[in-house]
Image (cartoon, rainbow, N blue to C red; front, side, top):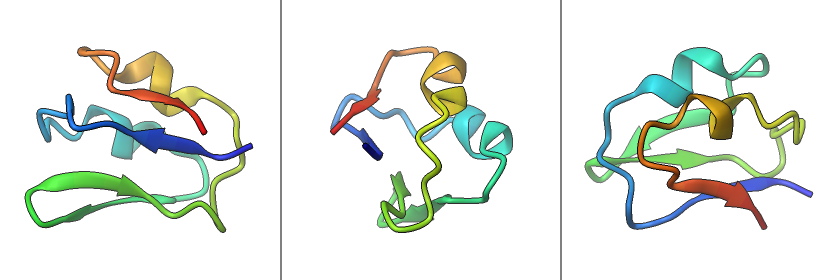
Length: 56
């Protein structure tokens, strides 16, 4: 199950550096996760300071 980033995202970028498969990028002023690339490891969710990332 891939992870997703909610509208609570503050675009700090903390999650992007934690992703071991580089599934996170910036689009339209916020971070997005490519579900096809996501390994569902949860590293991004653990790094998010505003808890904007959860499993789909």
